[in-house]
Amino acid sequence: MKLVTVSQMQAIEKEADAGGLTYDQMMENAGQGLADIILSLYADDGEAEAVGLVGPGNNGGDTLVTLSALAAEGWKARAYLVKRKKDDLVKRFLEAGGEVLTRENPFEQLAEAIETADVFLDGIFGTGIKLPLKKDIAELLSEVNDVLDGLDALRGPLIIAVDCPSGVDCDTGEVAEEAIAADLTVTMAAVKQGLLKLPAFEYVGDLEVVEIGLPADLSSFRDLKTEVADEDSVSALLPERALDSHKGTFGTALIAAGSVNYTGAVLLAGEAAYRAGAGLVTLAVPAPLHAALSGRFSEATWVLLPHEMGVISRDAAEVFAKNIERATALLLGPGFGMEDTTKEFIENLLRGKVSSKRAASRIGFVQPESEKKEETNSQLPAMIFDADGLKLLARIPDWHKLLPGHAILTPHPGEMSVLTGLSKEEIQANRQEIAGRYAKEWGHVVILKGAFTIIAAPDGRLTVIPVASPALARAGTGDVLAGLIVGLRAQGLEAFEAAVAGAWIHAQAGLYAADDLGTTTSVLAGDILDSISDVLSDLE
Image 1 (cartoon, rainbow, N blue to C red):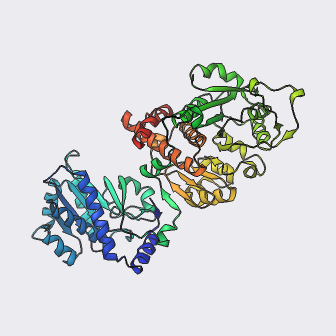
Image 2 (image 1 turned 45 degrees about the vertical axis):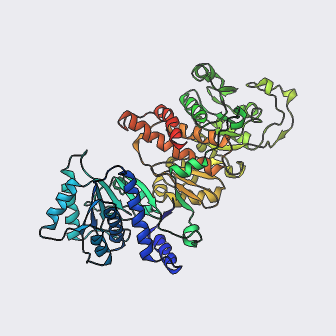
Image 3 (image 1 turned 180 degrees about the vertical axis):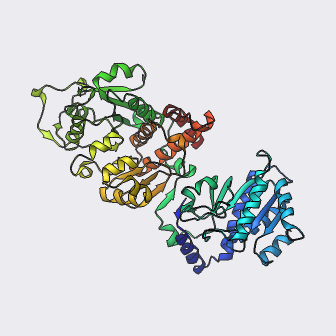
């Protein structure tokens, strides 16, 4: 799904109209597309009812086309006209068997229609609205909200916003206090950026896009590089799992993680990598952690790293490098802690300050000096940096030049602040621009975590995850995300695709976990981990 500003959408429609796809035809396509969604939801209901608020512009036109299509299918369809004259679309609606509520006391009729309706369409205003609302419209929406609030939640209509909820600024995400919260927003051609901002997102409900017939070669649409991840797009990214596969088919994820104070990060990241489908997960940890962790994770293999007081030491790069050969993706950072010796471990690894000789038979032990060869800059596999690893990375001069091509960085706003020198407030005020700018400057994929996580690629591509939930606001959830991504990367997904798929699956797993528990308050990182298989099952 493409993500657009209001001005971009207007430019798209203008170019389409100039190319022969008229505004009227786009309206027809949009309205019929919405009608098809509704009919699919009520396929077995032969006596369904719909009522719609119909505004004066194209948004109201979309709504009338939808209501006419429903009436033609035998629905009882009614329209409440808001500052709209009886134009050709209204006449067609009436000819299809629809009813316009314009007789005496029309609002009383609207209230009665809402009480018996299966579907309520909010089609007063579209993307062009500017706040505040005029007094008469604000009062109408307030009265409609009163009617809706008075209905039994189980018997009330499905509230569908046409393109966007009336009263939402589709650029800024600002919302009039009188706006009607939708159960489903069906937006036309592309997602408007304001719908994925707060507070607007709280009024959107589920989000679907309908096509309006745009030609494939329409440059203003084709050239858009900002998208919204959805089930179909993520499903298409996942690798196939052939019947004759073996563990080598799905790669090896090598994860350097943990310290004496942060042992859980190792297990969360490692298991998430397996849940993502990696064939083998090897965990490289400070040696003292092995006894405590190995009994809790029997599927993993282990590399025991030299340590200083329970944190990975500078000497560990030697051991770690000797176990890279079979790895198809590396993850560094979860639970590292902030000690200088661990920073030096990272720097030694990235600068190639390790022996080129590999000795798999001695995994977990530093090789004798007599067996070391001259330092060489080893070829590193695909790499992901997370959590404390990012903060330590920021201490290394020219760190972004040392990483292998298209590494993945997974900062939350605080970590992004450390990496960039910008304040968290600056970053949060313009998340898309900041993520995109630094992905290009650094030459790596940036996942800027938070509400509506953003994935930015060096080539300008940018994807937004359409989820904002406190279910994900819990220690350890970032470790699960990092593990998912390294697991997907290990299987051969390109960096940007692995980042998008991992972030979307992670967000959905958070929603699934909250749904299972009945609350976002009690969701733990382990609950999100347990929900990954449910998300993947639904993607198959």
